[in-house]
Length: 203
Ligand SMILES: Cc1cc2nc3c(=O)[nH]c(=O)nc-3n(C[C@H](O)[C@H](O)[C@H](O)COP(=O)(O)O)c2cc1C
Image 1 (tube, rainbow, N blue to C red):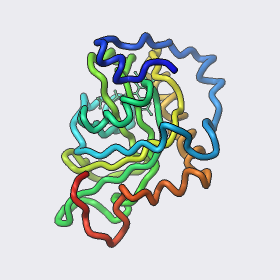
Image 2 (image 1 turned 180 degrees about the vertical axis):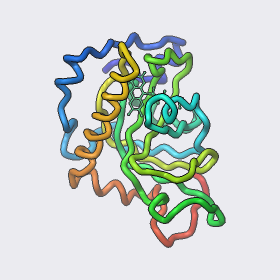
Image 3 (image 1 turned 135 degrees about the horizontal axis):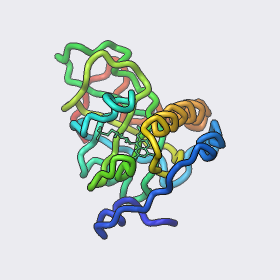
């Protein structure tokens, strides 16, 4: 297997990305991976949402929630860099205003783990985009996620539009992948807070 993201980071190396061509984007499959998660998945991530560079919302029309370094270790230590799919939930405290009940359910997500080669980041990050229209941001709130499968490698692009196009395809692929019964059941993972239950302490 190619080195994990954490192995690259430990060597202070950044994986050399391929550049996605128009031909590569046109040939993308609409569903990937096996009928149910296979090792190392499921991988559970929990942590407070941090501010990234803010480019996801501004540049890409795809707001992302960044997790702190220690929260991404369960994934980066077993997986290579790339784009992944799974489920996520935002867990605010009880008194929190601005969230509707539907914002706090378990929702499909896509995530990117790596150095964002298009933006030439200097450090390893993980950004989760939840497939849902939130009316408020959730910086500082706890995010819980179950990563269930790999979609593709992180790539470099000749234009921002090309990256946006691939992210839009990632969202469709993630939804198709998660609709399979072998994945649906992970929306009920113990890490998620079920409606009506008490807010659990951070793990
Ligand atoms: C589904 C998805 C796929 C992504 N794929 C790539 C990619 O192939 N190459 C890349 O450089 N960045 C990729 N990104 C990362 C975005 O560049 C990054 O999330 C964005 O710059 C926001 O980061 P920021 O919040 O730190 O500003 C992807 C992000 C998402 C959510």
